[in-house]
Image (cartoon, rainbow, N blue to C red; front, top):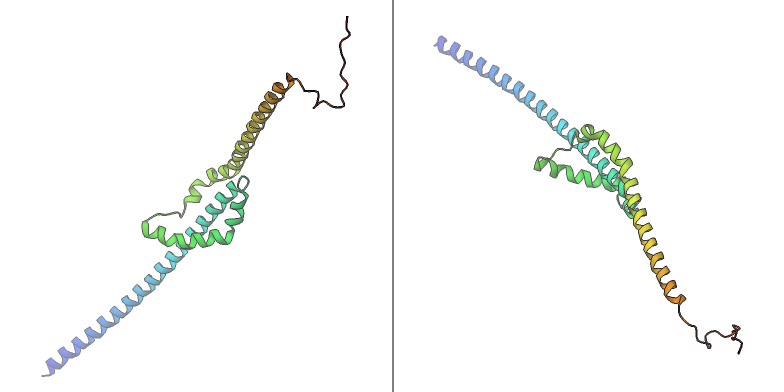
Length: 165
């Protein structure tokens, strides 16, 4: 009977050690899950900041040509759009994180060149419209130069008459 008691004690000891190992492992898993959650939240915050920056850059590009865009896409609006977009992007597997770092120089060039290009396009378009209006105005003036003005319309204008021979 004593051997059965020793066996039970050994089994109880093993069960306690197994429970302790499980508790330690579960604690480690909980800690790891917490670290994973914190890492995911940090990644989402980074993605949201990058997306917000991209939206602000895009708004800045169009603001010289379309001033209302700059008024609509404020920093706060871009932050809210980005914060709402990131979970959807994560769900779909779209990753913006690191995109700015990989394309930083190109984005910087676009930020400088795009407004100039848009303003050039707008300016040239206005120049062409002005030239077209000027050409139409010249045609109208040319058409009126050959007209004979009736005497009623030319009151107050001295008319010379040709001497009679």
